[in-house]
Image (cartoon, rainbow, N blue to C red; front, side):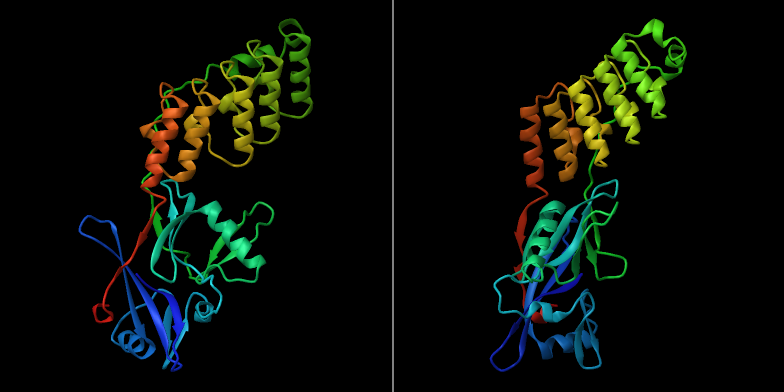
Amino acid sequence: MIFIVGITKMNNNDKLYKILRVSKDANGQNKYEIAELNEALLKQKMRQGLRLENAALEGDRLVGTTGSLGRFITDRKVKPLVIISELVDSFNNTLGYRVADCNGNIKAVRLADLLKYAQQARAKGLVAIQNGIYAEGCGVVKPHIRSFRNGGFPIEVLNTKRPNSTYQIQNNPTKNKANTLRIEEIFNPKQIEQLKLGKAHGVNIALYANKEFTAEQMKEIREGLEAGIKAKLYADPRFTVEQMKRLKAEMIRGFDVTPYANPAYSIAQMNQIRLGIISGVDISLYANPKTSAQEMSEIRMRLEEGIWCDCEASKIDATNL
């Protein structure tokens, strides 16, 4: 892939283009090279077959194909970034983007950070991204970066792994169903209140009609069912109320808690696994209840250094493009 990442106006009204080439080395790793050439040489190269991801020739005119090339030409210190690829995990969740600045510096940027940067730039009247645009969220659609390129940005998959869970829920809704016919006999007043509330709200109270649950645990399961989430993931008396609250809140926000919905994990451990999922690291390397939260944090941060890092493109002569 080859991109224009910067344009500088020269004193003679010519333009100097910075061209970034992304390829693979012998080990299959990304290789970044940058060259500088004037407009006449760039057009000549394009006529000879050079293909750019964000520009094309229309007759003798060089035009942007993923946003105006005029976005690069600004006197402001903040120049637009070019998104090279969208970083996704093995489950096709967007984690961030790999971007290039006008000097050929390559950065892997987390999704939340790029969204914040683009939002702030737009508020100041600046263009944050040459080949994409910040789109506000609306309803169930979250804020995102929309590509000007048909088909979206090139995808780069981070080979994330998640451990196979051996945890089994100790709660039997089928067995509990019989308890719903003897509520007054089996449960205490506070538990009965939660069961009656669930019945009135139309949820499946058999999921928590188990006398091993406290009334507070029942409440968390009932509220999860009412919110439409998979409350069965924490419908086990071994979860503490605090763990249930945490899992419920994250599922309501749309987060997949399956890798750490296990009462053997402390809340601090759950948090480290969640942060690892967001960062796209291989959580199977530390998602173990026997690994302390502090150890998890140290392993996670070391793994993140291999993903969310910067690199500089090597300079090449324009004739080598």
